[in-house]
Length: 425
Image 1 (tube, helix red, strand yellow):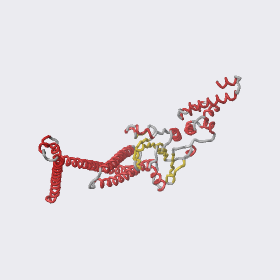
Image 2 (spheres, helix red, strand yellow):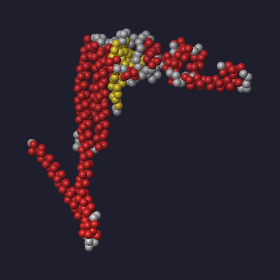
Image 3 (spheres, rainbow, N blue to C red):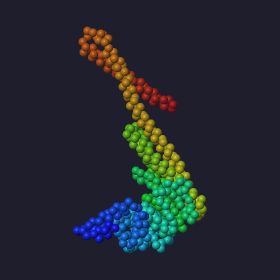
Image 4 (cartoon, rainbow, N blue to C red):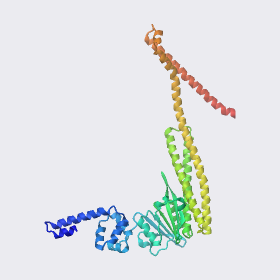
């Protein structure tokens, strides 16, 4: 409306004014689009005519353009960018087909790569909502957000939909140097296809891909894949427990040494606390795996061979549970021993202060007496340098005698303590 009003008016440099107004409107349009999510911008583009949609598209930030292309229809996308297809930017989508008993990976970089393919495993890593919706619509299901699975109750993490789809939400261990955490993973079994969704790469999944690719007949269907993933997670947890054993062994040698300083004890306590956290995380993850395996066995969807393999995984989990309990006991012992050394160090410092106070106690008594007026009366007629020098010598002599007496009784107690074990023999 403003542009039409400017056109009908006669003014000097009218073209410059029209250009400035146009730029101002485009800047305002861009500021309006910046806070909007990709879904709303896609809805706006769908509702506009071709010319207006192209104007709006020209003001969209480049980093948001790819997400919007996932949301708009094919006809609208062709009007805006022609033959350009939305791509998977920072996400990673891996599809696997079963060929001659081996898992062969299908490179997925655009939407057309999935057309005509019959994968048995779709692995989605750090995908956006639009990318997740596209994959779900392509295969006829709704895929969950792996970041939301931790908000579900434990009883809701394993369930079967009315359509027959099996949903499992589990935590997998990610143990790296200096940090360990649990990564939520969503599993969906739909028409013989396994969909796995997570926001980070995991060593367990990478190992599974290598095994299935290198060993013919390693997997036969989607249930083999999910059981092997859970089995590999148990193996990964067992390796992490071995690392805890090794670390606690080194810590134990330090704790059981003759003496440790407070600084060393603080470092040991930090190391023990870190291993305790990792041990607890491993225990929680394997219990979560145990619930998932039990759910699959109760669902009666496994073959006899898969059922036996699941039972073996459960036996491995039971053995790991006993190991984690043992590690908790060892961690508590090392923690108590370290705290005991800290108390011993404190007692030594207090003992030194006690000795000093006992040594100076008679000196303080003499000093109090020397400060009285009676001392001046007693030393009347004696030059004060001689009087006070004698007083100082007597004080030092009493302090030395007290110190030697304390050392004598201390050595006597040590000798008697050494004789006790010999008598017991």
